[in-house]
Image (cartoon, rainbow, N blue to C red; front, side, top):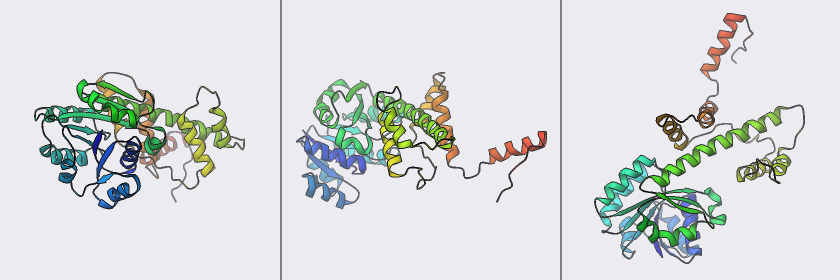
Length: 300
């Protein structure tokens, strides 16, 4: 098949390479043309200097895939690209967008005769080598049209039509919420090991647990790699961002009256990681001192 790919960050560029390795024609556009040219020189992609050039290089029905940051950047490019497309063309949003936004995009584009798909993409920087897990929402006939691309991008059984507009991003949202909880459990367990009376080798324990243990996982393999690079993680600050999906998962749980304490607390713990000295913790220390005379540590 042929595809126009907009956005050549770490995932977008690797997706372009994997598609080229699968024999697809890939026209690429990036805000900085040098990245597009690099993919052309090294992997046979076709660089475009503008969105107009990218759309013009494709044969109808065109497939344009956006791999841009969720939110304003994706919204802006949908508004820019949509007028260039014709009835029956397909626009795929591969960002981690809110599923409600994707429903709106799908309905708005459908009114203009443009087919839309929201694609949750998981795999990170490892997707080029092992493939991307793809969670896709939209009309069944649109899914069928782009399926050869999905089959190339994903490992065996690694893609799924999840339902109508928004379904792909909804599944990806919950996927990332679960990821928050899993990561937090590993983080807490390794901290207990690290603080114990024993001089544990955390890399070896990570490796051990992946040999048939019930907690074995790819995340644990990545923990092993991290401990191999820096045994006590001394080169990393304990500051953890969140990209939005965890917040949306917690909000959805609230809206649906579903208890989700693990995911909720894992999100809150990320917030705590960004505070060098929590005011709330100061209040707790002051209260213990006031009612019980418990000692407090003086600020430096």
